[in-house]
Amino acid sequence: MTNLSDYDTSDRFTAKVLETHRITPESAPEVRSILLNVSRPDFHYKTGQNVGVVVPGKTGSGESDHFRLYTIASTEETAKPGEADLELCVRRCFYIDEVNGEQYPGRASNYLCDARPGDTITMTGPYGGAFTLPSDNEAKLLLIGTGTGIAPFRAFVRHLYENQREWKGDVHLYYGARTGMEKLYQNEERNDFANYYDHETFHAFDGLSRRPWMHSDEHGLSEALEKHAQEIWELMQDDKTYVYIAGLQKTREAFYQAIAKIAGSEARFRFAREEMLEQDRWSELIYG
Image (cartoon, rainbow, N blue to C red; front, top):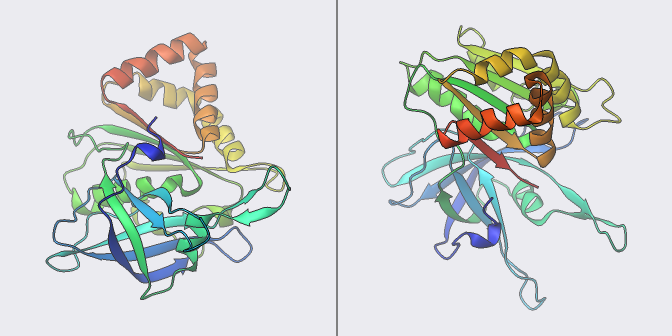
């Protein structure tokens, strides 16, 4: 897995914030959809790519620039020649200091969530993402995600059904959240995926925790995966199936455990996964 320190961030540019909207209710953790405009003739991106956000250090404080990657949640859109619009899905994060036990705001996420229309953001990229769509329009996509890991899948689904009209393959989306209010792009604040429910090839499966006050997003995902494990395992035996996993390490672990169980052994699951990796039919975007 590539480390953040391995990315070249020397070629920087600014993006202007056009819109910022909260896409979760006030009663749920804050997640925002942030629309940015890049006025740069040589800037182009593809569905599934990432961009870097650089939070400037404070002068005189010894605080260095802070770099984080975000997967683009939109499809390629051109505002006008020489300009491009892109959308990010950002959760306002906090972390606990291991030494003093105090809670502090995450620098990049709060920098973005606090930005308002007209503000400028320092960026780099785009970078070749972990996810690329197959050229075969009859391929079957298995999308597994939690939290803001939904971002690349929103872009995928929108691109397939709005821009790639000849797409005929089945799309299976498994998404985990603690509650229905925390389902990104699938709640009362923003329900983008509702635009695709009438497509026969689009299948969405939500995994919600039975005890949201105790469990994480991955707990609900685990239950959904276990319920449909046989169907998922059969899909993995199909040469036309491509697997994409996005989210925290726990997301990957939940998927591995559920499918290894139905496969009969970890060795059998590992063999199937390695075969798909060799054929470029298995991709993961794990963060945190």
